[in-house]
Length: 311
Image (cartoon, rainbow, N blue to C red):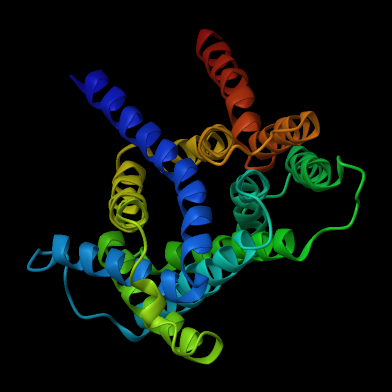
């Protein structure tokens, strides 16, 4: 029974990875149909309202302490406002396939920040992993002969790094605060922050959200409700069941499904050097997050324990 439950959880997380890979392609289509910041405001606000509706009246809802408010606001600033602003703007300047590959550095960046701010141990293999990951990014953007990093790619990198920073604050807040409540509050607070940015950078653009083809609105709600709202709920629930380490490894599937989706739905060409860069990033993530090192060390530790017992 326990094994079936574990397989079911793995299946749910795998489904989320498919949706998140596809979501980058959906966002690319949305920023081409609507003003990017204004669209992001409505998308995040819809996700926030959906998550609030799911948990309203539940036992997880309670007042926050000053410490929890501090980390929730910082999480919203980096994980919602900064991440989604730079992601939307970046996708107006670069293709979806490049974006998903740069976003693949998220586990690696989170690992680096965890070393700096959470006191995680930095081993030589993790250093190797960090180096391999960034070599992968150089392949992604430099394989076509133009070694300059474009502004769009820089924006995507900032979006990825901002989300990694938010994970540090989320981890600190969820030590005492339910992750579902924090997710909902971050989305609602972040959408208000994005609203002010849209007033400054895209004044009078609300009217442009009307009149798009029906298919675009379907994509909008799938991205907001399924990918952002439901996806984060399912992902957080999986962390509670199988742990953050195992769950985070599934993020390596996001660029894979993103590349496939961009090729199928956007007719974007996937080049050999992008595939090469993706391999570097995956290997870098496996080493840089400490996953592969832990997996290799466990059998050695077990054999030592068994050897001691036999003596």
